[in-house]
Image: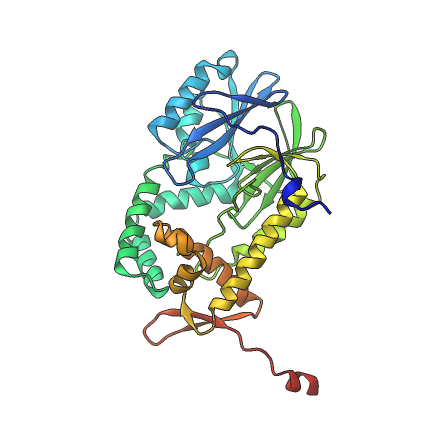
Length: 357
């Protein structure tokens, strides 16, 4: 029997360097922009229209990313105008340069889901709001973060927000199930939650190509996290619910992810991602042998990430899994007298009592 791991096949074993582009399919170019994070790159896609180009995603607002774009404008994009900029979702590495890029390309339309355009706008407001900062501190304290973690969170937050430039002030809205034409192909819009509120992927049935964004990645799992604005959210339920939609697409689809390498093996990868979260939920349940704050659970679940300074994201992922367990009756969320929020394993129902009923 073939294992899921061996069913993943990469289109290329390398990636574009610097200002290089690779042709992925007729009229589709792949470029790779540097990011100043642990995840050090984001893929962007340049699609040739009959009368110009469509760009998908932007990178963060850094001098290095702008330099790559300038080289692209004087290179492969020089032969025709840019028709539109499309965003898969509103995270900094995907829309950080959207305002600059739409202007640089000649005041072109910005195309996104409403939820992702608004979430990025909120992120900009959040960076400027003292009340949001204070709320985040209360959130972190309630989940067991110490002073060093709080200081690290503030520094990381300030650094990340600085990479999100002004957004376009107008929007062409994408909705789930829409058909949008670019790159001389028709694409079905697949809007799904979990990694982001209204993440858009694009499916071309004729050529069996999926522009997956961050929803399906080739070697890492998308970040699924809970943050201060929605402390009891259940994004993992949204994410897991999205995976059958992608498995309904052909197994031999070419997947173009926002990080990592383009690949074949969509069904195998969706199964791997579902299994990854099942195992993580089981691990978390075992750590809930008594009520614990989420940061303590994060140190057990993501020990390496916390040790390497990724405590903020480890906490967000832990909360996503903890809230999922609470929503399914496998864990309970309580509030201690000191205001801390505790997560513990739900008591097993009494089997004799259940039988009696």
